[in-house]
Length: 310
Image (tube, rainbow, N blue to C red; front, side, top):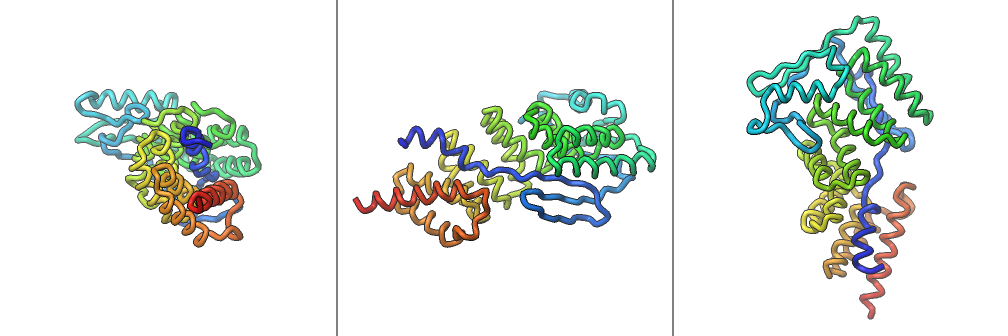
């Protein structure tokens, strides 16, 4: 494979695949269990918490664009939020005051709230069974009663991705960020969508950077951001991000950094990175999803080793 082909094809291999992340309320504050590729997050939710306040500067006016006081008024923000939420806006009040946006949702009765939470769990069960369409219907019923429930929005967005409904997934993730601008799952998911589905690196970088500001130790995020920078030819930034991701012992990050060094004429540095990877991640301990990238790393190492003997 020549240099141009490597530059074009490598980024897809460097991106880390996302696990299915599902979340729903539980009596404890936060619990996590793992079941194969499935990760469930249990987050507590207090029924009386129906008010949300967000700094005006964190409001998203459009995909990849924050509120700018020089370009938008408080009324613009209110209109934007109501437009994003559509019919849900009928059960919420929005106000702008002293640089803050205040969103208040009208309370559901305790009985309706309990029934909605039951449907949220049922939706997660359907998602686990590989029934995204059924789960979407259940999550939609949850949001009709508790429109501020972020877990239902995230999970519905992921189900839409599984069905190939990219636009619906984007809309839901953007709604999550309207309510929680630092939300990890929504920001990284939008970054991945704009990078891999929309071929829009500028907006993808916006969401990756947004997420990285709040989650600087997320190795998968750093690796995906590095792959995007690799793809757009911003190699210095890619190197920094790959080095951050290597701390999380991701095979994709080691391979990406080694490939970057090879392409920049530093074969010794590339070999050193791969040798470190093989020492820290023995093949016998490798997760199944990383087998392909590990094989690519071994091929690259053999190529580098062969070149050094010539």
